[in-house]
Length: 313
Image 1 (cartoon, rainbow, N blue to C red):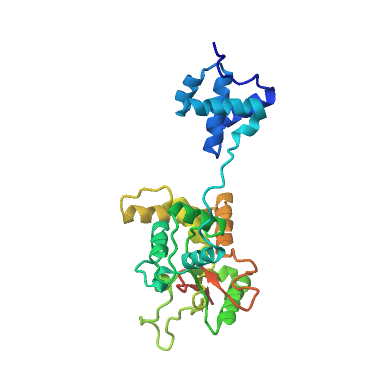
Image 2: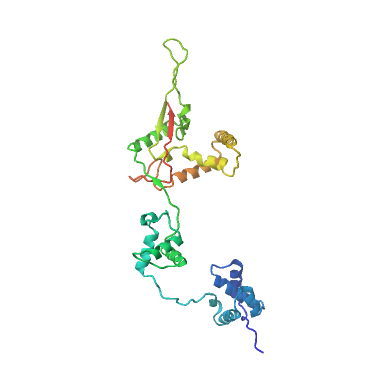
């Protein structure tokens, strides 16, 4: 009677290696299945039982066991055949990459980005240079060439002729008059400015109101407004993880936080959130307060709405 096919006695290192692969899994399905076969055989299971366990043919299980008995753990790594000859030349691959990195609208397509299916279909139907490539082969080619699916970034460059002058004015207001300066966004709070009118007073002695001077941020550079650093904590501590039933409740929550914020201006959580928001706003290397070190000022990912810094003189 023929002896059953079994693995030889495992060494301690081999047993630990196989157990680690089976327990933690592997990026290679082949390695995982073969390790399972060997570990199951070492546990006394027969070839038919192992074949049912890993859903493989019995001959496949026997081949793996025999190979392990010959070369050890080297049998875990598959030795693929060369496959069919390469069909795409280097020029063909360059053309595929060039097409993938070109916006479809420039090639007459009615969509703004490629999917793998759309790109493969376009390459196959290209009259000038048809290229037949499968979706998986196309995906592998893009990865091999360093082409990945990324989010589009937007940026605006300020063309304000008074860019430096406005930033200098903001810096002056913040450094020289910190107790008389406050910042706000856009034009909503302008209603709090002093508004001239008429009233009863002694003749020749009308009431006088203090003047308010506004320091406008440069065009498309509202990141220079100090109020921007406070929007992140406001969203983080009042809007995130919230479920307000309507705007009135949300407004009350914002007001409650602002009252707490004003009473706890040096709270560690507030300071940490402000630092993170400032780092996000000024993440471009070389930015000091409000300007870049280089002559070209590129602002990335902002809506471009101008805010103001108001200095009460």
